[in-house]
Amino acid sequence: MRKLASLAVVASLALTGLIAPALTAHAAGADPSTTTTATTTTATSAATETLQQRVEAFMALHPATEEEKAKIRALVAQLPADTLDRVEELNAKLGIRDTQAAEIADNVINPADYQCQQTPLGDWLNSTVAGMPLIELIILAFTPAPLFPTYDALFFGTESKANRFGVNGEYTNLLTSQMKDLRGFWDVNGSDIQLTPMHGADVFKDVNRLARVIRAMFGGTAEAALETAKVYLQLMNAAPGLQHGAHPYFTFNAFAFDPSDEPELLAMGLTKKIVMGDGVLQGYAAIGIDSKVAPRAILAHEYGHQVQYAKDLFQTTLTGPEATRRTELMADAFGSYFMVHSQGEALNKARQLADQKTFYNVGDCGFTSASHHGTPNQRYNTAAWAIGIANSAVDQGHKLLVLPFTAKFEVKLPELVAPDAN
Image (cartoon, rainbow, N blue to C red):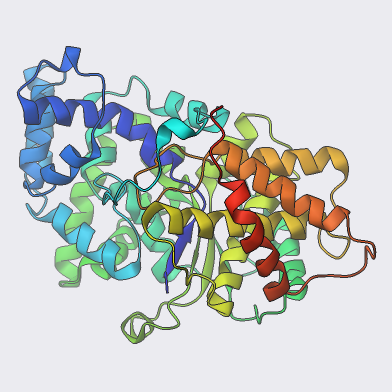
């Protein structure tokens, strides 16, 4: 069973366009100014180098003064050389993919068969990282810093009346109310699923909180974790554009987590969670998706993953990208069915379109990546199909149970993912 299922891979794609071309040029000995195509394989092979070696290679291809590079070297030198290997090992244990050196699966989908394009949400995120100074790019691409808010939420986040959702708490009532509705909608027990926020700035404003996360991730003594936390705070202080962790890149995700079948993870105190990041909510607001729809659609999707965990719906004969795509499109369908059903959120027609646009915007074109979630068109059309199931029911008060709904989805899936380029 997959332990973690996430809404989007948009954040990793945003940085891939900036980082991978330079890594490609480094590996090939090419002039970076003539290298325009990113290759994830190169990023994967580079992961065998130490953190300091990868940073040095990247700096060699990036315009910056020697003074700036010397400052970066001094800061990065204080971090363990095997930091990237340790992150990869931890991500694998918890089911979290290393988005900067993603594992490449067999190419079972032909990209030429599909319409796939950058979405407004992706364009917005790209705009937030474009033109960043060297040190900020290095922190985002070559250190675990962007993962600290994720692991803070996983290890220490709890459901509480004190929680706030959104940078300013603007989605708190909306999401906490919907979580109650979701628990009563599907025929699974949701009482032990905790809804928790992910705030990047909170993690980096307290050295002891950051040290707690670092120790939970990598082990070691409390004293060593505290010293490492101080180094990361030095890095963040040298990169004001990252806003001490408040930059949306740090929390540009929402995900569901279930360690139920993993005794080792349960022994670590991990529990079922849905985590909602500030960054992805900021993104939808920035591109003008209905603020009463996008946050709820995201939460409904993540609850859909919890439904999959509860009913063991990750099992499939599909492999690689196709398997992940099936999982994500199914969660889109669960989410959209709930959003429009009379016993769910009962969205009107205008807001039903906003629901479809929500999922369209987290589609991706990573056809060969094991984390491929489906193209924008596939996600849009899956939401439309689920909406149609709810709207076309003769008895609008009747609600499909999980397994009958899933059976309908499995029949529809081949049509939803059929080539659409022509």
